[in-house]
Structure formats: C-alpha cells, structure tokens
Length: 112
Length: 115
Image: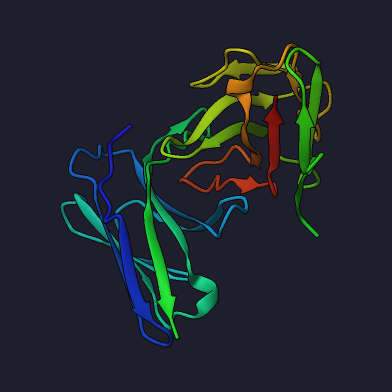
C-alpha cells in the first residue's frame, strides 16, 4: 500500500473551513484515498473516500489532484467537535475489504 | 442503531490469566477485524476475518487468537497475556464491496492493562 504524508498538527478557527492536506505520491491506479478521524480515544470514524474524482458528503469534501499524488480533506464549517486526529489512508481492496494501515495522522485543533 | 460493541470496555488483569474480549456487530457485515493502538505506533491490525470460519493474521498477531463461529461475533482471545499486550483495542467491521465502498465501522475500544 502507498505511504501517505500528513502534517503533524494544524489549527483552525471555529466556523472556518479546515483544509487538511495529504501527500501520496506512490499511489497506484487501483488504490483509493480514505479519510478517517479519531476523536480522543474513541474508535476511528469513516469520513469519506475517493478514487480520482472529487467527492462530497454530509461531513466533508475530498479534493484529489489530477495526478492523484495528493489530496485535501475539507471540513467546510469546522466546529469544536471536529477536534480530532485525522488519518489519510491509501488502500486497495483485498477480496473486497479495505486494508487500513494507519499512520500518525494530523492532529486538528478547532479553536473558539 | 447500527453499531459495533465491545466488552469489556476496561480490563485490568495479571500476566498469564486467559481473557477474552468480545466484539459483536449488528450490520450483517462479512468482514471483521481487530486492531491495537499504542502511543507512537498508531493502529495496527492483529487479525481479520472475511466471513464465518475464515480468519487470517494481520500485522501483529503474536500472542492472540480469534474465532469466527457466527457472522456477528469475532472474539479476541489472549491465552496468556503479558505486559506488552497492554494497549487500546478496537474491533471493526465492514461489508465486502467494490468501488471502495467498504468503509469500516469501529467499536468504542477496550483498554486493557496487564500487570
């Protein structure tokens, strides 16, 4: 699986858009980009995923560059409850299942 | 409510005393998995199961056993726990799907301390 690089930490003001970058320059053609987050020591929570097109759901937007070597997770109106560690994971499907390899992620702090 | 449950949530035990951490999901998912999380090491996969009676080792399986006799349950067994198995454990489940649509649902975690 391709390796990802994320900033260790980021800050964002409440109500503003939080933009979390991720580099995955060795991604292969059949690998997806997944984002999960972990609030304190709770179980990780799925946010969004994409292959090559930009994606949006009720939680966030995912922008993937045309060469697929990097992506950005956007939380459009960050709230204090969005303070968490965000993991960018690149993975293919093995027999239909994700092989999730978690790195250190980005610790996002939303400030009032 | 769709969920993954784990029991117990907290456990303190002594070296060598066999224990089982239960995991159950109510979403009829084929895939289930166990992870452990340690400071500085992130989440690492212990074992996974693609369906009933089908299990396989993850990245750190030593010292653990699993079974999958029913689709909804995937217990994690520590036959002889040691202090280096002190960790935060997560169970997860997902469908087996195409087009990347196999996001995993995680349980609330079990904090295990082995003295």
